[in-house]
Image (cartoon, rainbow, N blue to C red; front, side):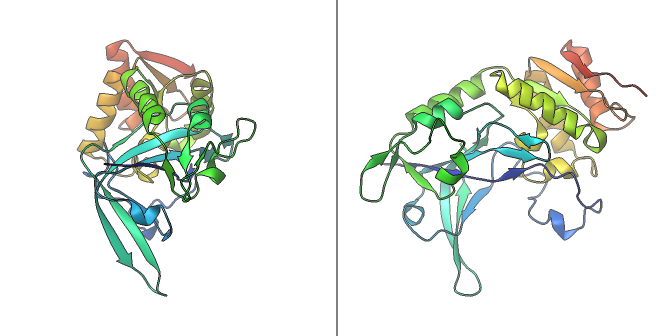
Length: 270
């Protein structure tokens, strides 16, 4: 019988990053063809229970709160990882980490406020007792789930994920170079009003969002085009450099306009 777990992951918007794609800063990035539609793996250095008991077929839910220089977004479910296999990796100084490789049913999830659901989640403690650890009156999701926790039942989180994946999403189109703050503000407004949002700073693999304007890639084009096609509304964050020739934003706007989904959030004053 498979078990379900939940783990908090730090998500941070980086606004200062190297422009050289060969920089070691980008070393965590997987090959461009992997990790777009589903995670590749999840790593923990915890050697205690329950991490050491996770096995093939179990599910790890990742939860996070996207932080930025302008504030925090509400907590969202980042990904569902169905464990295909577990690697135990020996490091220096007698350190060990577990790497949980993601199976074909693993996937990323878009932004959607998970606060109410998380406040109801029950976990199982090592002694077998059950606990509802999230405090509705405190923003303690990161503290509660900073270590992997075993869920008493996956029902609530599975129901939440099904809702997020079955309803139309809003797509945020913007320029990284001068529109990130405005895009954050729009994402924050949409999420706090109960919407489901695809924004690359959350909805793409780690660090790919910062790198995407440096290298053109057919796989990334295909993913973004599909997300625009599947969306209900595309919000154009029309900063001064939005819609410049050959930019991702120009391609995104052209497709959204052709589909009748384009809405302007900020007017370009240039």
